[in-house]
Image 1 (cartoon, helix red, strand yellow):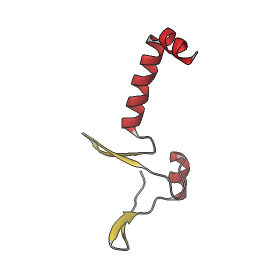
Image 2 (cartoon, one colour; image 1 turned 180 degrees about the horizontal axis):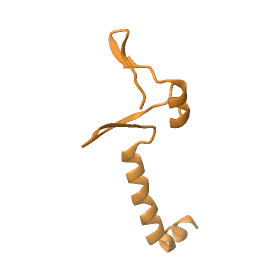
Image 3 (cartoon, one colour; image 1 turned 45 degrees about the vertical axis):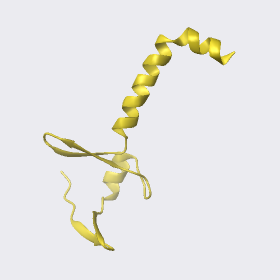
Image 4 (cartoon, helix red, strand yellow; image 1 turned 90 degrees about the vertical axis):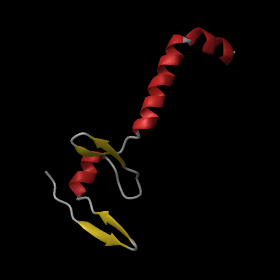
Length: 74
């Protein structure tokens, strides 16, 4: 478990993530993180869950309609 403190950043508030947490998330300064509300609390992830869902649908459609897409590519 990591302990972070809320700090003032200009007129806003923020948290500073330790280097080891950034390394485990594979993010760096300037990258975006997403907060996902779960029944247990909040989850922080570098992956956009909405985009991931859209890509899963796109992959399924591309797999199901492979022949049509191949013809359109000609």
